Length: 308
Image (tube, rainbow, N blue to C red; front, top):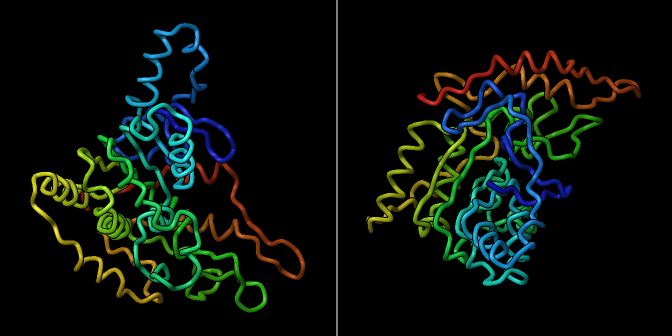
């Protein structure tokens, strides 16, 4: 699997995108060795040593290998570059994997949940908002994998969390104006994934093979695997009622609370986030960031229950 260069021009190969802190809570459906060291990317210059090797290498790199993207903008840039420079352009894109954050999926698939409603706020100016429509312009894609990251990591990148603004003197706030200590509520992974897939369906239902992996409930995976299989067999599924429910949520009730038997949230990680935020106390930084070893020990306690 090939991860094109990131914003920092670093190609990621090997063990995948999850941080080592989540080694014990990795999705069981992804066979990853957390102890395996990342390896350097291949030296692609070798394919230019002879014409036969070039043709075979080009076929493999452009068509057969899965292109994995960790951000929507990286996918957009890659598609734009490929359409102008690669022989045959986008016809060579056959296998894709998306490994986005919660907020990036919401923007990418234009999930209409407050405050990300049409014509509300400035999120529509984000270049990645609704960018999933580009998937319809890739008719030769044979397989698409959607990976959902750990709900613990989502606490620090929640679509409804810290906005960078302030409320009052020095308290950071979220979209609903909640004070500093209340902005790290971990959304329910079951609901977020279900919402994402309900809004993603119209963009990906034409792709012959859709794979769902990562941190998603078994019941959610089975539901959408069945829906996508039925769509490919010609049985249409109407998700409009589900999307209407999503749009009608009140901003004050978001992010959605978790009612799973085993909570998606992890109190100790929420505490790490709170302690890591800089609060000014009489002109002096009052951060209380735990030691790395403490954080690692805490994170090893986190378990994600797939069977809930």
